[in-house]
Image (tube, rainbow, N blue to C red; front, top):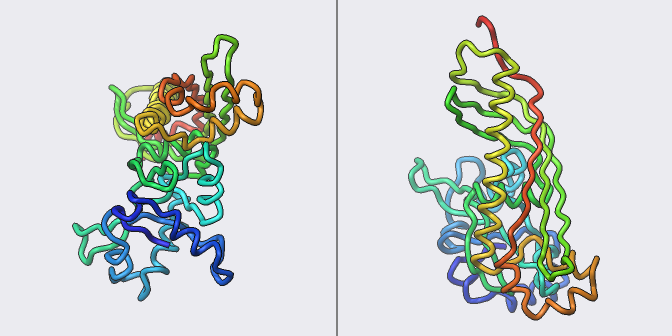
Length: 275
């Protein structure tokens, strides 16, 4: 189900309501937002498939290998929409006209507030969202240091988000990301032993992950769009305190200073003494 950006910015609740009431529509159908129009996406010819819908389905599956976007279905989107507190997201899709022939590609996430699209998250910020929501499955973390650069493959990842309202009324949002990486490509780092390389890569990866998580959080604060469900978590764990702050949640959310912690383990240095 694809919405053009102009339509999405005006509101899509009526269209979603139509599909939810139709008994023939599957509730696990994916929702996407076109960078231009839905027509442009659906009429783009693909070398991979004679039908653009099949091409898009494959793109959504492939995103699990990069963890730069997310497949959101009708049920998940509408559940967040009706929850009032958590703002939905949907994958952004566009036509890459620089390639020959033009091809479809996912380009991040569309951020909704109520049923209107209010902003976008690029691929880096989308990865930050996935880090926070424990949805990173695989992909790479590219880092650069004074000694060289490296591409680190994600072996495993987990994260936790535990917001709470303190006694003084401030909102605490600790975000912890734990990930295990292995070296996929290494350029530079001459005359360094494996232990030194590992330490340098670890520090760079930690900063990279924290930077992406923070940049995504700050972008959603500018939109006053709680895409993480922080308000919902507080309402579940501290219902009495939530009653006191729910009316001003948009303003309070935009003032949160998240406490981001990243723990990185490098499984191997990828160093070859002699190739």
